[in-house]
Image 1 (cartoon, rainbow, N blue to C red):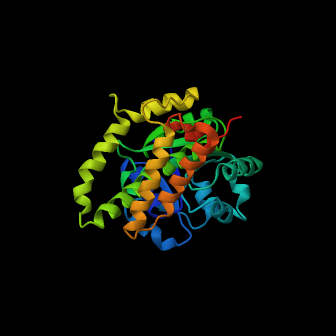
Image 2 (cartoon, rainbow, N blue to C red; image 1 turned 120 degrees about the horizontal axis):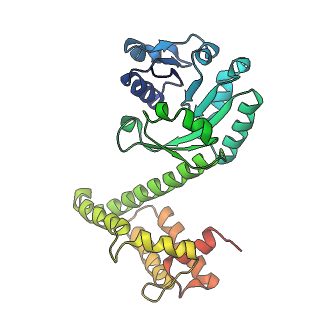
Image 3 (cartoon, rainbow, N blue to C red; image 1 turned 135 degrees about the horizontal axis):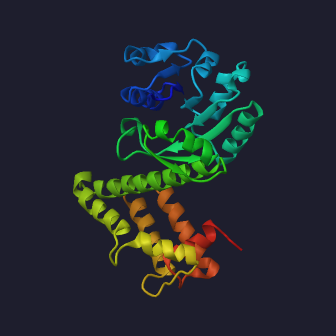
Amino acid sequence: MHAPVTVIGLGAMGSAMAAAFLRQGRRTTVWNRTAAKAAPLVERGAEQAPTPAAALAAGDLVVISQVDYAAMYDTFAGAEAALKGKVLVNLSSGTPNELREAARWAAGHGAELITGGIMVPPPGIGTPDSYVFYAGSEEVLNAHRETLEVLGEVRHMGADPGLAMLFYQAMLMLFWSSLVGYFHAAALVGTAGAAAKELQPFAARIFDQLTGDGPMGFLSVLTREIDAREYPGEENSLHMQAVGMAHVVEAFRDAGLDTGVPEAIRDLYARTDAAGHGLEGLSSVMELIWPRG
């Protein structure tokens, strides 16, 4: 017999999570500020709670998917007594410090907060590609692991409640900056009349080179350099990259494109060069991004 689960917040992500629980035959209670959003899930067997307090009373595990942590406070305002003994798994967005404060708030009401960051869009919930960063008590997480694995692979990042969001936002930075880089590249070749589909195979090739295990496996090489804090630049010096990036900015300017992002990269390289890292490798920019003393 599966343990019951409550889902608070029925936007695209929350609805997808509730649907995943229902597909697994789990008793699923839902609540949303706009009650009408629950209708499709009720048709599939979900129980709609009339109030947040009733939603909390439906079971010990409460999965929250709202726009931010302020929404959680608003939702449970006046129903704090019902939080006692509950496990709140909040997959909403926030900052690491907000999540730490939320854990203290939950503890103050007798609840346990597990923070999380889910690493797929709504259609990916419950698929083999789905994984979720969690932080907080590993013992509490493990007690509900079977239920949470319905959403995706469970990855516990540590007891500090801020760690789930730290890893989540690190991945978003990587994801978004990669896509923005592709948008800029597509725009640049587009000014010469080339369609993005002409660029795509080359973009895919460079991403493969970044993540591959061969001599072009930049990610593995740069990871070792970052951890060792050693940035060999005999083959590709930072100064050379700084000069090249300045040329990229000029190419964007000449093409009449927005230069904000290219200029930011150019300036980071130039500041690193000016700080005395010109003969080191590209990864020496870490000394400006993360001065470690």
